[in-house]
Length: 290
Image 1 (tube, rainbow, N blue to C red):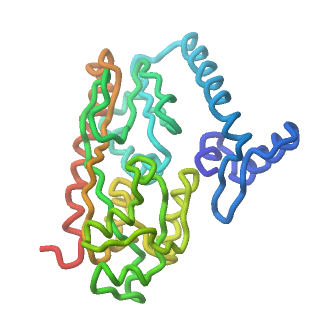
Image 2: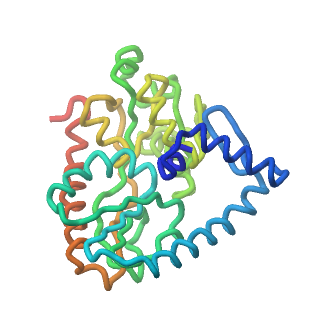
Image 3: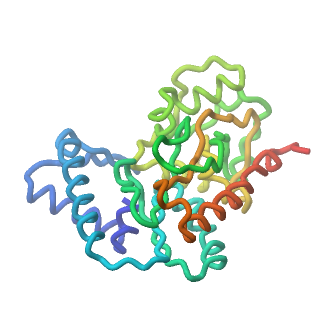
């Protein structure tokens, strides 16, 4: 809802009202509304891919006739990356390349990326994407985190103590890996924990709310390194005890092979690699780190 509102330059409430009007017009419910979460119904799942395909065809047709500025750069990324990493840092690229006109678009699925002129995308995968020019920029690390106030009120001395805390779970990592993030983390900590007792679970449409709740002191999140780096650096989140789980997933910045040497594309990829390298300091933020 946040991503849609941002894309349309309206409030989340206005998006919700438009959805309600659409459902009334169609005579079917498209979304299941839950506390701080929203899911597609069966009817919604049937409609979504066809609508997405139609929008992609419309956008492609418009792009074919719109005159292009040779310095245009379109950046596709998941909403989580845009909100928590790209936008807080993008001014640095704008200052280093003031002649480049930058457009940022939310990547809801990999099919949204058309590999067109002056287009780049962030992608998470185990291996470099085939048939695309790619640069590996960051290895995904899962980190147990909470607000400073929560950490002060809930001291823990071992990974096992984490089982007594309100754990916030987003299911996105499980969709990628086939195993929940918290189960993988407890494995890395040497604990055999199946189906941890989550205080709250968030589906892919609402995963960012887990971060919001952690920032508000409502529980412990297993944060994705690229998602939480900014909040960690600013002191708004603190690491808890236990391992920093290095996964076998990496973030890549990709583009069409034919676009790789375009000045604005190359400049952005160079900048992303340099900026992402700063996340190698994550371990130094862990309490007790040398």
